[in-house]
Image 1 (cartoon, rainbow, N blue to C red):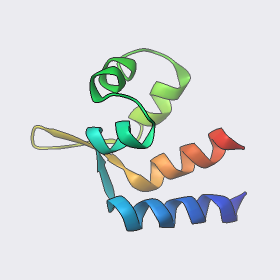
Image 2: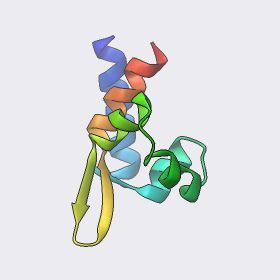
Image 3: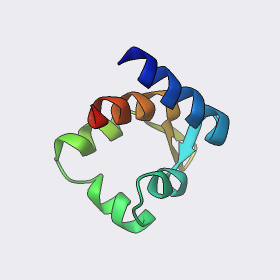
Length: 77
């Protein structure tokens, strides 16, 4: 389990860097950016987990790649 999480995190950091934009996250999850934005406003468990990774830099919203990788590793298990 831990190895899988580290492999996913390493791959994602190499491809996207330490922070994902909303567009990159939507692409990764195979969703449209607007659809993802609306879904993250809901009170679903997956939205809460993804919103834990949310970081605002000025007016822009990013998501911590490591936190998203950990969520994807546990969601796929």
